[in-house]
Length: 368
Image (cartoon, rainbow, N blue to C red; front, side, top):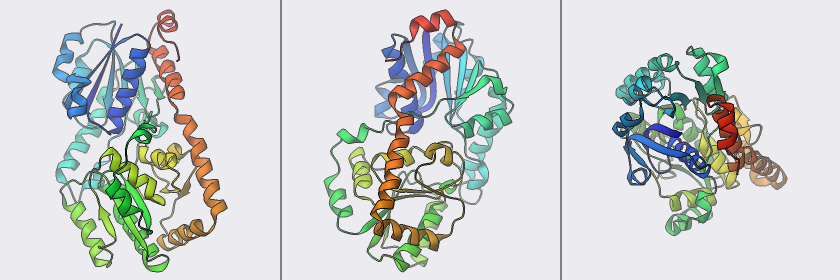
């Protein structure tokens, strides 16, 4: 039996791409024929994927299994609809378009198309969210609840451990200042303006020897301009740094030499950087929205009111109370056990057993 995966893009460092690769690696380890097809890809993706047009060759085989990753509106959904393979949908969530309304009209259009399309994808053997938050959205969109489930992201948390860190960035971040970090795209649902407001309270009222670091892609649109304008109006533009997309070595330096990780996002389908911050021992403060509480699983510091002054004082307490900080980071490290490779292998095997004949599944899949 062959297993095919279709993704919108296969790119280095992308969460959906990492999920597809984790599945691909396990399938090959279990001796199955596995392929990935993508609408587009970077240099990394070209090593593992074919363009999605090549999937047509396999679309008519009823014995094959198709895993379709749905994370944004992309024309390759047509292959999913037309395929005669057994079908598994993995829903990574699509941001509600209202977040983009004042900043990015094209994103409003694409997010609207993406969310409107979701009910049309309900005819499948199994539909999975990478969080229960996403699974519930599937049910709300008309997917039968008994044909849904959860397959959490399998973040490659150890990937950065073997990478040589960016020494220049490490020297800059390690100059004695306190670094607050956010990792991810600069898009409106992430509410980076609220991270800046928290930093303003911390920098002005608690610790003037501090900086705020954003590491992640910077789309050229009015939202990024609005963030720069906000920092300028607050008089902290020389302490707020947008690094853009950084290399693996740069990302490792950001995590290793930062002191706190802050998320103010108001819509998350999973949020891998929270777990990366756990892995590197940064106390995580995160707004309890979307799948964030589920991903953190009781670890880190969750809040449901954005009281910036109070949060700034709490950061100060963490600096003074080593025992409290250690309790938080220890709980975060323990939480990572739920996202180990072995745990993911067991959950993937459970998923495959739901769509394959029991006898074949028992013979074909062995948890390593």
